[in-house]
Every structure is written in structure tokens, then in C-alpha cells.
Length: 167
Image 1 (cartoon, one colour):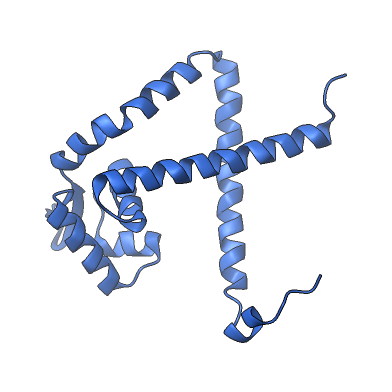
Image 2 (tube, helix red, strand yellow):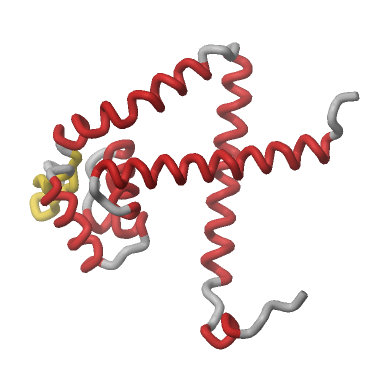
């Protein structure tokens, strides 16, 4: 007998949680290999995949203050992973840009992930790939809503953290 919808839905949810944990492990290993912290890695991801951006744009995406962004960019610049370049469209702005040093460091670190991903996706027909893409896009959209909901609730006060949760 094939699994019912409820058990299959639960299994997909569990598989997504396992995948999230695996990506978390990968990101931790990648940050360690690059000699940076996880927030620095997230910043690099934003500029590698999204292109050069201003410190203000990156700070908004990372939810960091201007001072924290300056410190973060200084660290990445010192490591040789980014550089500040003049914005060709705005004379007074600087863009945080990934360097060739970063790409040279990433290539061998990510080769296995890229090769593995291509091999797995090669098994699927175009229609199946479209279904997978639609699911992932919808899941991403849903996660954005979850993040907003978590931020709306905010952190519990220190007094409530000390109290036991009701059972």
C-alpha cells in the first residue's frame, strides 16, 4: 500500500529539516576552510550570487549596523576575499566586490558540491525539474514569511526566559 498524504508530507518535512542541517554543516565547514565566520560567509554568498553591492545594501540584508558592516568588510578585505570599488553609477558610493582570490579559494572547496548537484539533477526529466524548481521556489517564499513572523514575535524578555515553559 502506498504511503498516505499525511505520512508522505511528514516525510518531506523531515527530509527538508535534514537537508537544512546538511547545508548548515556544509556552511560551517566552508567558513572554517576560508578562515571566516558564518556571517562573513553569508555576506560573500550575497555578493557572489547577487553581484557587487554597497555596504548599506549588504547591511540591510544581513540585519547589521553600519559599524558592524564596516568591520565585516574590513575583515573580508584583509583576507583578500573582497575589495571596495567605486560605483560606476554613483560617484560617492563604493561597491563591495568579490575578488579572484575568493573565486580561486571557492573552486576546489565547492567542486564536489557542484559535481554532485549536476549528477543528481541529470536523472530528472525537464517536467520533473520544473516541479522540483516550483517546490523549492514556493518553499523559499514560505521561509521568507516564517522569518518575518519570527521577527514580528521578537525575542522573549530575560524574565520570561528564566521561567519554565508551560507543559
